[in-house]
Structure formats: structure tokens, C-alpha cells
Length: 209
Length: 209
DNA sequence: TAGATTGTTAATCGATTAACAATC
DNA sequence: TAGATTGTTAATCGATTAACAATC
Figure 1 (tube, helix red, strand yellow):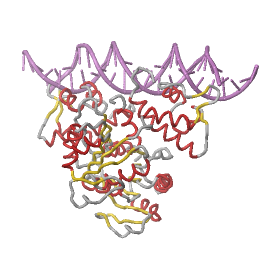
Figure 2 (cartoon, helix red, strand yellow):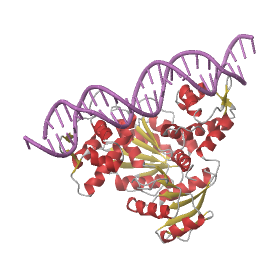
Figure 3 (cartoon, protein in one colour):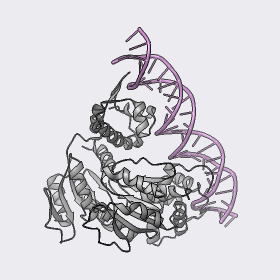
Figure 4 (tube, chains in turn blue, orange, green, red):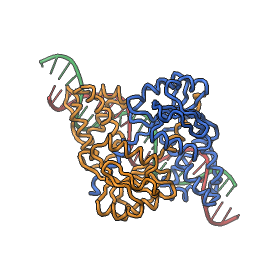
């Protein structure tokens, strides 16, 4: 990996590359050229090669890229060759959907704790994760050394949850609420702002009548 | 609105501007300068003025922008001053979460139909939306003139659902599955690729130890 | 009026594309 | 070897930032 800071645009494309490579792998395709990948993924061949060469030469002149090798290399660049402990904060339908998605599709992410305010679901269990009230969030994150907090609480509670997990030493926050969080330097955050996405959608629906 | 094509980057910022303006409005703040908004939203003042001037001069020299006026203007640019009929396809936990979010927070979006393969939930109702099996999706979309299809079905079913609603004359697709859809020109699509977001998150967690 | 702040042009910066030598 | 395709440099394009005249 080179010294120069990799641009955000490149990083956002990496999971997509990996996703397409996984598809190719499933289809039993063993090698792919930047030109052929370009046709499928929609980026130019030039951009694909440029993107990949930020991290090293994964291809072979005259041949192309090994699908499974490139898939794994990108995974490794992203950090998907490590294991992560996750806590889900907010166990409404969105939290439940996420929990189920993670446990079925993301082998390197382990849901170790689930938190909600509601008593009703408090004693239920999800796989090997306890379901607890938010009062124990801070200590749990600290003691279990949770890496990632998934925040799916109502908008008004999002910042206080973020403050709590930050205080407990969280490393990353996956924010699925409709607010932007105020966080100290050094805490990674990714926002999934669904309503922003919906609003962009309707913009693009204009003119199509 | 000027002729020149507005860049995608600008459009993606608009919902965020609107979100911050709504917040200011709630706080009773009536005017804001690009400089002050910059401090809150994190874009440069220059960029804010540049973005807004793609669509017209909404400010007043020496004063700034009227919060409520700018909020509404951005809404109008995005197309949020119109009404939209929505069908939710896939009524698992994610579909349920979306349905609830939309009906509580998006007054201009109306869920008119919900579709799932499962019999169990088939006779339940959500507000004024019927819950139906996927077999009736095509006719429903066509007859009710549904504007937007929200796709939350399992990955393997996403493309066939998309094909069905496109055939029935849908105008926009809000895709919450983990695949990219193959769609004809003229159909607007927005993808919420949650796993891509999670994978970007872990990239940014590196180096923080 | 004077001060503030926009609207807009020009300068800079960064990202994408094109081109091609290196090499498998 | 010849053909194919990468890795990488250079050219282009577009987006962001800076600057300032217009004007409220």
C-alpha cells in the first residue's frame, strides 16, 4: 500500500468491485480483464486499473486478473480479513433486519450484544448475543471490546448513543439514523441515510414525466 | 433551473442541505448565511453558494438565506412538492421498517400496496395499503399507476421483481438489495447498498488500531 | 451610508480518461 | 514469438475553492 492518501471515491468503489468479483467466482469464472470487468461494472477499464494500482499490481500483463485472488486482495485492503465484534443499538424492525443480514451474510462480523429500551424483547436472544437494556451499553462495549456499534435508534437518541459508545472506546460507528453524528477525530463512521437516498431518487424521476 | 446538467455530487448534497434547514427551522432560526451553514454542515461556504446557484439565487446579499424558503425551494428542486405512490415489494423486517419509516416521516409518499411471497402476513394490512402476493404485482402497479417500487426481497429475486415493475410502467426504483439492477434507460434508480457501506466503514477503521 | 453577504467569475485542485511502453 | 493486457505516465475534464464586484 502506497503512502499517498487514497481518495474516498476509490474506497467507495472497492466493495462494489469485490461484490462483482464474488459473482464471477460463483459463476466459476477464474480470470477477468479490466476491459471485461468494465462492461459489467460500468466503470472504465482505465479507472479499474488506476483504482487497483493504488494498492499494488494484482494483475498480470497479457492475462488479466485472477478473480479469486483479486476478490481476496480487495477484501484484505478493506479489512475484511479480520474479525469484528458488533453491538446493535436499537432493536426495532430495522435493527432486527440488520442483525439477520449480518449473521447470514457477513461471516467476519459477530453480533455480541443487542440493546434496546423496550422490556418486551429484553429477554429474547439472538443467536449468541444477549439482548440488554441501554443502561448496560457503556460497560458492555468497554468490557467486551466491541469494535463497531450499529445505531438504529430513533433520531432523537442517536447522538447520546454515539457519545456513550465513543466514551466506551468504540472504533467504528455504522449510523442508520437520519442524523449526522458529532464525533471526535479517530472514530470511523459510515452513514446510511435512507431518506436522503429516497429524495435523490425523486429528483432523478423528474423529466421522465 | 439552468440548462446545463447538474452533477450527481450536487444532487446528493441537496437532501442533506434540506435536512439541516429543517433542523434550523425546528430551532426557530429564520435566516442563515452560507458561512454559518458551512460551520454546521461541513461544506465550504463557497460550495454552498455554488451549489444553490445551480438552481437560482435564493439568497439576499448582505442578509443570507431564509431558512424556510430555502428548505422549500430545495424540496421543490428535488420533487418533494409532489405526491408519490409507492409499492413495497418484500415485506420482511426491512420492508416493515421502511413502511413504518415512510408512513411516519415522509408525508408525500403514499404506500398503496405491499407485496410478499409469504402467506402468513398476506391478510394483514398496513394503514391503507393491502398486502398481496407477488403474483398480482404487475397488474397492481399498472392499474394503480404506482410511481416508485421499493425492493427489499432476497438478492436472488431482485432482478425479476425489477423486470416486473418496469414492465408495468414504474418510474422509479428504490433498491435496498445487495445487487445492482439491470434496467432500461429512463427508469430512475437509487441503491442503498448497506453491505458496501459496512465494508467502507471497516476500511476507515484501519490505522486507528 | 457602511457592513455584510450573495452571485459569479477565475484559479486551483483532484479525479478520470487516454495513451503507450512494459511484459506476460 | 505475437497478441493481449497490465501498470503507469500524461492529458483532459470536472469539481471545489478563492476572490471580488454587485447589491441588499
